[in-house]
Length: 415
Image 1 (cartoon, one colour):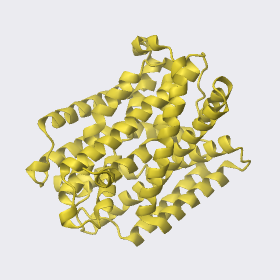
Image 2 (cartoon, rainbow, N blue to C red):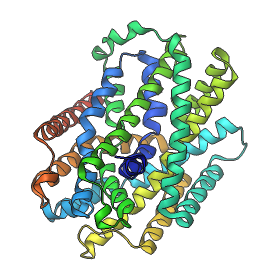
Image 3 (cartoon, rainbow, N blue to C red):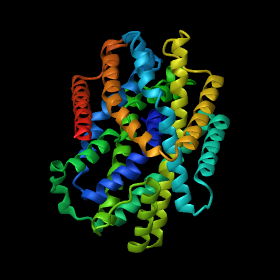
């Protein structure tokens, strides 16, 4: 597979990476390193491996059938699409509001711009809408690749500079497994690493969008598509480890407690890099933080609008179809308005709503993973495109682990 073919194969996975590398990496992975050193590296690797089939099945189904995986849900039964819509789409505006306010806060913290957070949030949303409506998918794909490239170089370099300060013996520590508070953090880390499982639907939509102008004879094989997606997915997991190393080297080694908020944590990391490693590493950390949230915000709004559009097409009878450009634009503007309204009305109690969203995602994750497993193993598609026995077993293992984590999360919360 030449480089151009690899780019085509990796396109849906790279957009997923842009969406996934957000708060889970910048905040959760960095805090994991800051609080526990390298002790949670194994957790980060394991959860990325266990969730891989659920995400890949979105790409598999779309490439094999030329339908969104929502069409597969419909084939499972009339109950499946409403279940997805009720669980994933209803909380999408709150999730987008959280991404927006985090992006705005980090922008203010890094640039020093003195504007109200709601004004910065509105500016960030406006820029996102302009990019997606005027440039379309080609701009999203191109800009995402550029930002991912900057993000990768900046993050790897910053992590490498922090590496000599890492306390390597922390990797063998399992003290966290006996602490209920630490376990809650670990479960939350795993629940959002690398991203909520519901994004598998967006992966199927991005796959179809990337392939809509392909000539039949030029279509890539399923093997090539899987290789491209795996490469992008591995990059996502590797960057999570880099952020963990940054936290371990710059904060854990110095005994510095991490700030709780995303913007405060980003400012803290940049300040510590400047104090301990110099100005250039601090700039690299700032570039990484800004790229993280820029890619997340753009891809998240695009994916959510496409998800709403696909569900709407299902109810119009267009099984497995996608929204028209006008439908996509309508849902994009609607989501932007809802997100800003949520921020304006609920800023004071926003953390409570985020806790609610977090709890819902813990329940939704294994349910969506199970739906994806049923679609890829039972719905109509060529046998050659179905996953191997090993991938099916990995999928089932991941589903069981996610259900167990959700049960443990609520048990610890209740206790």
